[in-house]
Length: 270
Image 1 (cartoon, rainbow, N blue to C red):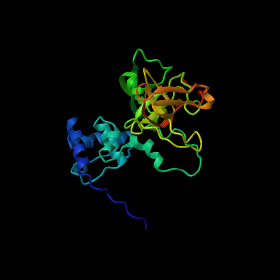
Image 2: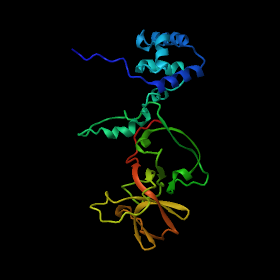
Image 3: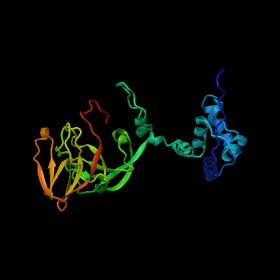
């Protein structure tokens, strides 16, 4: 015999927040019932979208957790996002791209673009300062005048809410091909001391984001007394740089993630 499905678990706090949303739009529970019936009709008569006024009262009292269909109806009726409504019940869908890492597949697979949620956005700069040169490397927080919402796209794996973000200039080939010009990097500013040691290969070597006088750099680093040495990759043909530490150069933090293109996309729609 199959295990019977339980109704749901109590959610008192979520119920209070749902009631607040209903009151915000000035609806009674019977109003919600009528509107949900219209949604069900538009969905081919699917009664899963219907919400009775008595059942809604129970939900607002914290006795039940609605199904995904009823939550969807409530988001439409209350003129708010589905993400906000499910967030009342402790589910942050925007964490999904990052939390995909919690469940790794053993084999290499073609996954496609399912990690990017439809309509998902993050806050990114929309107006660059007039004197910013995209050819140079910058700390993103100092590049912008205003911030706006952008589709996640390539940046969805960066933890921009809790880390700094750096931009590698279009003419900065210091760590090419490991970090290509035009890349965005995630920076952990808690790791702002150069880690000494020997590395098995260049991929294990820590990369640092460095603030210089009037500019930034993204490179491997060594510290020799008061000399900060910025070391490029051998393939880049960029010269090693020496600056006085910390007067002329200081460590912003360690680069912990990078998002970059490795080739131009052919036939990209304009």
